[in-house]
Amino acid sequence: MSIALDTTVLCDISQDEEQEPRVTVRAESDDADLVARAKTGDVDAFELLVKRYRNEVFALAYHFVRNREQAWDVSQEVFIKAHHALARFRGDASFKTWLMRITANQCKDYLKKRRLETVSFDDSRLAENAPSHVLPPDRSLEAEEIGAAVQKALGKLSHKHRTAFILREFEGLSYEEMAGVMNCSIGTVMSRLHHARRKLQKGLTQMGFMGADS
Image 1 (cartoon, helix red, strand yellow):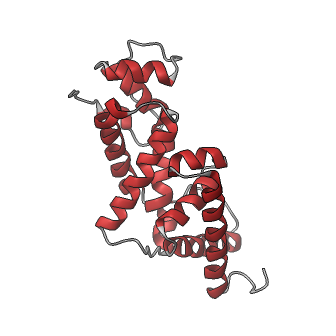
Image 2 (tube, rainbow, N blue to C red):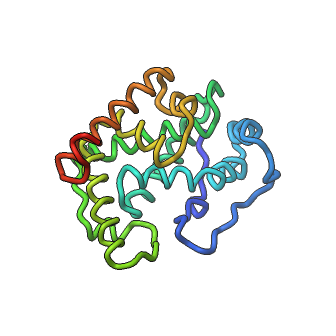
């Protein structure tokens, strides 16, 4: 099945106005119904799925690549891959979980391709891409420094440990949801998250942002 996907529905989440997809199905349709329609070649159904989850995909991609433009590129690739693989989606997990799994894997491939498994984040990039919050100058600088340190420490984690930390601490997923995204048991999820936190703490301690007994 080959469908021309209207990428206007993949607009940047930072934009104030959003393009509405050409919807011929009801917006309140559940994912299973939309997936079933999309499998038959219903472009509008798939575009509604894109609109429903583009923010979540972009946010997860951004937590990995830490750059809006790159996260946008990753998001487009995610939905293209999801569209091509839709016929193989059996519904063992929710569509969202399946989509988050594709996103995490796409981020891994993206970083590998650019030899960025160990990512170095400078303050200027963080300041440019981070959400805008108004803080007093001294607190703003402190938050920026801590944020840069956390991202640097995260960049040194393995992909599986980084994914566990991001899904739990940034995306707020439950252990069950994380297990679906990471395609492993809940016990493995908890183990990876534990090791991620320990390694992150060690990295921050070595950089002087945490005490050795924290």
